[in-house]
Length: 245
Ligand SMILES: Nc1ncnc2c1ncn2[C@@H]1O[C@H](COP(=O)(O)OP(=O)(O)OP(=O)(O)O)[C@@H](O)[C@H]1O
Ligand SMILES: [Mg+2]
Ligand SMILES: [Zn+2]
Image (tube, rainbow, N blue to C red; front, side, top):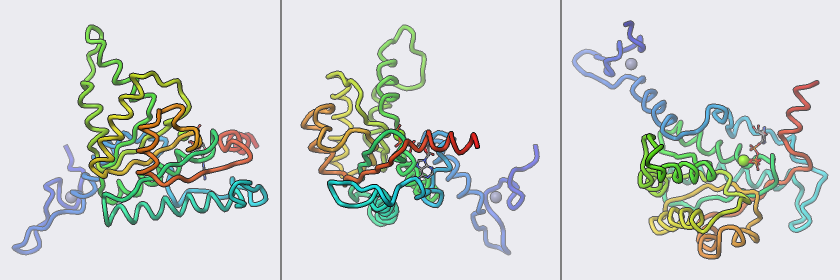
Protein backbone atom coordinates (compact mmCIF):
# COMPACT_ATOMS: atom_id res chain seq x y z
CA UNK A 1 0.00 0.00 0.00
CA UNK A 2 1.28 3.50 -0.84
CA UNK A 3 2.02 5.68 2.14
CA UNK A 4 -0.60 8.33 2.88
CA UNK A 5 1.98 10.92 3.92
CA UNK A 6 4.36 11.90 1.16
CA UNK A 7 6.63 13.73 3.60
CA UNK A 8 7.44 10.93 6.01
CA UNK A 9 6.05 7.81 4.26
CA UNK A 10 3.84 7.31 7.36
CA UNK A 11 6.85 6.89 9.64
CA UNK A 12 5.72 9.95 11.61
CA UNK A 13 9.24 11.40 11.77
CA UNK A 14 11.46 13.23 9.34
CA UNK A 15 15.24 13.03 9.50
CA UNK A 16 17.04 16.32 9.06
CA UNK A 17 20.68 15.33 9.25
CA UNK A 18 21.08 13.42 12.49
CA UNK A 19 17.95 14.82 14.07
CA UNK A 20 14.52 13.20 13.89
CA UNK A 21 11.61 15.62 14.09
CA UNK A 22 7.91 14.75 14.19
CA UNK A 23 6.19 15.10 10.81
CA UNK A 24 3.24 17.52 10.44
CA UNK A 25 1.00 14.55 9.64
CA UNK A 26 1.25 13.35 13.25
CA UNK A 27 -0.66 16.42 14.40
CA UNK A 28 -3.11 16.16 11.50
CA UNK A 29 -3.84 12.55 12.36
CA UNK A 30 -4.32 13.49 16.01
CA UNK A 31 -6.82 16.22 15.02
CA UNK A 32 -8.67 13.75 12.77
CA UNK A 33 -8.93 11.36 15.72
CA UNK A 34 -10.21 14.18 17.94
CA UNK A 35 -12.91 15.06 15.40
CA UNK A 36 -14.01 11.43 15.24
CA UNK A 37 -14.07 11.07 19.01
CA UNK A 38 -16.07 14.30 19.36
CA UNK A 39 -19.04 12.61 17.60
CA UNK A 40 -19.74 15.92 15.87
CA UNK A 41 -21.95 15.00 12.88
CA UNK A 42 -20.41 15.58 9.43
CA UNK A 43 -23.10 18.07 8.52
CA UNK A 44 -22.02 20.30 11.39
CA UNK A 45 -18.35 20.47 10.44
CA UNK A 46 -18.95 23.62 8.40
CA UNK A 47 -20.59 25.41 11.31
CA UNK A 48 -17.66 27.69 12.05
CA UNK A 49 -17.38 31.19 13.45
CA UNK A 50 -16.12 32.30 10.02
CA UNK A 51 -19.26 30.91 8.34
CA UNK A 52 -21.69 32.48 10.80
CA UNK A 53 -23.89 34.80 8.76
CA UNK A 54 -25.44 37.82 10.49
CA UNK A 55 -27.92 38.52 7.71
CA UNK A 56 -30.52 36.31 9.41
CA UNK A 57 -30.71 38.57 12.47
CA UNK A 58 -32.87 41.64 11.82
CA UNK A 59 -31.49 45.04 12.74
CA UNK A 60 -35.00 46.47 12.86
CA UNK A 61 -36.54 43.92 15.26
CA UNK A 62 -36.13 44.71 18.93
CA UNK A 63 -35.81 42.35 21.87
CA UNK A 64 -38.23 44.32 24.05
CA UNK A 65 -36.74 43.05 27.31
CA UNK A 66 -33.26 44.29 26.56
CA UNK A 67 -33.96 47.04 24.04
CA UNK A 68 -31.37 45.50 21.71
CA UNK A 69 -31.99 44.47 18.09
CA UNK A 70 -31.97 40.80 17.06
CA UNK A 71 -28.78 41.63 15.21
CA UNK A 72 -27.34 43.17 18.38
CA UNK A 73 -28.05 40.15 20.56
CA UNK A 74 -26.71 37.78 17.88
CA UNK A 75 -23.49 39.83 17.93
CA UNK A 76 -23.27 39.38 21.71
CA UNK A 77 -23.79 35.61 21.47
CA UNK A 78 -21.25 35.37 18.65
CA UNK A 79 -18.67 37.34 20.62
CA UNK A 80 -19.29 35.15 23.65
CA UNK A 81 -18.58 32.07 21.50
CA UNK A 82 -15.31 33.55 20.22
CA UNK A 83 -14.29 34.63 23.71
CA UNK A 84 -15.05 31.19 25.07
CA UNK A 85 -12.64 29.59 22.58
CA UNK A 86 -9.87 31.99 23.60
CA UNK A 87 -10.56 31.59 27.33
CA UNK A 88 -10.77 27.80 27.18
CA UNK A 89 -7.35 27.69 25.52
CA UNK A 90 -5.97 29.60 28.53
CA UNK A 91 -8.05 27.98 31.26
CA UNK A 92 -9.98 24.72 30.78
CA UNK A 93 -12.05 25.56 33.88
CA UNK A 94 -13.62 28.67 32.41
CA UNK A 95 -17.40 29.33 32.57
CA UNK A 96 -19.58 27.67 29.95
CA UNK A 97 -22.35 29.16 27.82
CA UNK A 98 -26.06 28.59 27.45
CA UNK A 99 -27.63 29.51 24.12
CA UNK A 100 -31.40 29.77 24.21
CA UNK A 101 -33.78 30.78 21.45
CA UNK A 102 -36.44 29.63 19.03
CA UNK A 103 -36.28 26.75 16.58
CA UNK A 104 -33.83 27.48 13.78
CA UNK A 105 -32.15 30.50 15.35
CA UNK A 106 -28.55 29.29 15.11
CA UNK A 107 -27.98 27.85 18.59
CA UNK A 108 -26.54 24.54 17.44
CA UNK A 109 -24.55 26.39 14.77
CA UNK A 110 -22.84 28.56 17.39
CA UNK A 111 -22.18 25.67 19.75
CA UNK A 112 -20.61 23.70 16.90
CA UNK A 113 -18.49 26.69 15.90
CA UNK A 114 -16.93 26.48 19.33
CA UNK A 115 -16.42 22.72 19.02
CA UNK A 116 -14.84 23.03 15.57
CA UNK A 117 -12.49 25.80 16.64
CA UNK A 118 -11.28 23.91 19.71
CA UNK A 119 -10.96 20.54 17.95
CA UNK A 120 -8.73 22.19 15.35
CA UNK A 121 -6.59 23.44 18.22
CA UNK A 122 -6.24 19.91 19.54
CA UNK A 123 -8.76 20.04 22.41
CA UNK A 124 -10.98 17.14 23.39
CA UNK A 125 -14.66 17.95 22.92
CA UNK A 126 -17.76 15.76 23.07
CA UNK A 127 -20.91 16.70 21.18
CA UNK A 128 -24.02 15.15 22.66
CA UNK A 129 -27.60 15.53 21.46
CA UNK A 130 -29.44 15.16 24.76
CA UNK A 131 -32.45 13.09 23.61
CA UNK A 132 -30.08 10.76 21.71
CA UNK A 133 -27.87 10.29 24.75
CA UNK A 134 -30.88 9.41 26.89
CA UNK A 135 -32.04 6.91 24.25
CA UNK A 136 -28.59 5.37 24.08
CA UNK A 137 -28.42 4.98 27.83
CA UNK A 138 -31.88 3.43 27.87
CA UNK A 139 -30.92 0.96 25.13
CA UNK A 140 -28.01 -0.33 27.21
CA UNK A 141 -30.55 -1.57 29.79
CA UNK A 142 -32.14 -3.86 27.29
CA UNK A 143 -29.43 -6.48 27.73
CA UNK A 144 -31.19 -9.18 25.70
CA UNK A 145 -31.27 -7.11 22.52
CA UNK A 146 -28.41 -4.76 23.21
CA UNK A 147 -25.18 -5.66 21.55
CA UNK A 148 -23.76 -2.14 21.32
CA UNK A 149 -20.29 -1.16 22.33
CA UNK A 150 -21.08 0.95 25.38
CA UNK A 151 -22.37 0.41 28.87
CA UNK A 152 -24.38 3.04 30.65
CA UNK A 153 -21.34 3.81 32.74
CA UNK A 154 -19.21 4.46 29.64
CA UNK A 155 -21.76 6.87 28.19
CA UNK A 156 -22.45 8.83 31.34
CA UNK A 157 -18.88 8.86 32.52
CA UNK A 158 -17.54 10.15 29.20
CA UNK A 159 -20.05 12.98 29.30
CA UNK A 160 -19.04 13.71 32.90
CA UNK A 161 -15.32 13.79 32.36
CA UNK A 162 -14.63 15.12 28.87
CA UNK A 163 -12.82 18.50 29.04
CA UNK A 164 -15.57 20.23 27.07
CA UNK A 165 -19.12 18.91 26.74
CA UNK A 166 -21.66 20.29 24.27
CA UNK A 167 -25.20 19.45 25.38
CA UNK A 168 -27.23 20.09 22.26
CA UNK A 169 -31.00 20.37 22.46
CA UNK A 170 -31.50 20.29 26.19
CA UNK A 171 -34.92 21.40 25.08
CA UNK A 172 -38.55 21.27 25.96
CA UNK A 173 -39.00 17.51 26.04
CA UNK A 174 -41.02 15.50 28.51
CA UNK A 175 -38.23 14.50 30.84
CA UNK A 176 -39.04 11.62 33.11
CA UNK A 177 -37.65 11.54 36.62
CA UNK A 178 -35.12 9.01 35.33
CA UNK A 179 -33.95 11.37 32.52
CA UNK A 180 -33.76 14.29 34.90
CA UNK A 181 -31.55 12.26 37.22
CA UNK A 182 -29.16 11.31 34.41
CA UNK A 183 -28.86 14.93 33.31
CA UNK A 184 -28.41 16.06 36.89
CA UNK A 185 -25.62 13.59 37.56
CA UNK A 186 -23.66 14.76 34.51
CA UNK A 187 -24.12 18.44 35.28
CA UNK A 188 -23.42 18.08 38.98
CA UNK A 189 -20.20 16.18 38.35
CA UNK A 190 -19.03 18.83 35.91
CA UNK A 191 -19.87 21.65 38.29
CA UNK A 192 -17.87 19.99 41.08
CA UNK A 193 -14.88 19.50 38.80
CA UNK A 194 -15.26 22.91 37.16
CA UNK A 195 -15.56 21.39 33.70
CA UNK A 196 -17.44 23.67 31.28
CA UNK A 197 -20.58 22.87 29.31
CA UNK A 198 -21.99 24.57 26.25
CA UNK A 199 -25.77 24.15 26.21
CA UNK A 200 -28.32 24.82 23.50
CA UNK A 201 -31.97 24.90 24.42
CA UNK A 202 -35.27 26.24 23.20
CA UNK A 203 -36.38 26.83 26.79
CA UNK A 204 -35.86 30.30 28.20
CA UNK A 205 -33.58 30.33 31.28
CA UNK A 206 -36.61 31.36 33.41
CA UNK A 207 -38.53 28.22 32.38
CA UNK A 208 -35.65 25.75 32.64
CA UNK A 209 -36.54 24.55 36.14
CA UNK A 210 -40.01 23.53 34.98
CA UNK A 211 -38.37 20.96 32.67
CA UNK A 212 -35.13 20.05 34.42
CA UNK A 213 -36.00 20.68 38.04
CA UNK A 214 -34.61 23.27 40.41
CA UNK A 215 -31.37 21.54 41.36
CA UNK A 216 -30.17 21.05 37.79
CA UNK A 217 -31.28 24.50 36.65
CA UNK A 218 -29.60 26.25 39.55
CA UNK A 219 -26.33 24.46 38.72
CA UNK A 220 -26.57 25.16 35.00
CA UNK A 221 -27.11 28.86 35.55
CA UNK A 222 -24.15 28.93 37.90
CA UNK A 223 -21.89 27.28 35.32
CA UNK A 224 -23.06 28.87 32.07
CA UNK A 225 -23.48 32.46 30.97
CA UNK A 226 -26.83 32.79 29.20
CA UNK A 227 -27.12 34.21 25.67
CA UNK A 228 -30.14 34.40 23.40
CA UNK A 229 -30.63 34.20 19.70
CA UNK A 230 -33.75 35.71 18.22
CA UNK A 231 -34.90 35.57 14.62
CA UNK A 232 -38.06 36.76 12.95
CA UNK A 233 -38.05 33.61 10.81
CA UNK A 234 -36.66 30.08 11.23
CA UNK A 235 -33.25 30.14 9.47
CA UNK A 236 -33.90 26.59 8.24
CA UNK A 237 -37.04 27.73 6.42
CA UNK A 238 -35.20 30.77 5.02
CA UNK A 239 -32.36 28.62 3.70
CA UNK A 240 -34.82 26.24 2.05
CA UNK A 241 -36.39 29.23 0.28
CA UNK A 242 -32.95 30.51 -0.76
CA UNK A 243 -32.28 27.12 -2.33
CA UNK A 244 -35.55 27.10 -4.26
CA UNK A 245 -34.79 30.38 -6.00
N1 LIG B 1 -25.86 32.44 11.62
C1 LIG B 1 -26.01 31.49 10.70
N2 LIG B 1 -25.37 31.57 9.52
C2 LIG B 1 -25.56 30.62 8.59
N3 LIG B 1 -26.34 29.53 8.74
C3 LIG B 1 -27.00 29.40 9.90
C4 LIG B 1 -26.87 30.38 10.92
N4 LIG B 1 -27.64 30.00 11.96
C5 LIG B 1 -28.22 28.86 11.60
N5 LIG B 1 -27.86 28.49 10.36
C6 LIG B 1 -28.34 27.29 9.65
O1 LIG B 1 -29.73 27.21 9.88
C7 LIG B 1 -30.12 25.90 10.24
C8 LIG B 1 -30.71 25.91 11.65
O2 LIG B 1 -29.71 26.33 12.59
P1 LIG B 1 -29.45 25.59 13.98
O3 LIG B 1 -29.50 24.13 13.77
O4 LIG B 1 -28.25 26.18 14.58
O5 LIG B 1 -30.76 26.05 14.75
P2 LIG B 1 -31.15 25.81 16.26
O6 LIG B 1 -31.35 27.16 16.88
O7 LIG B 1 -30.21 24.90 16.90
O8 LIG B 1 -32.61 25.14 16.09
P3 LIG B 1 -33.33 23.98 16.94
O9 LIG B 1 -33.96 24.65 18.12
O10 LIG B 1 -34.36 23.44 16.00
O11 LIG B 1 -32.31 22.97 17.33
C9 LIG B 1 -28.89 25.04 10.11
O12 LIG B 1 -28.89 24.44 8.83
C10 LIG B 1 -27.75 26.02 10.22
O13 LIG B 1 -26.62 25.60 9.51
MG1 LIG C 1 -30.34 22.95 17.60
ZN1 LIG D 1 4.07 12.50 7.72
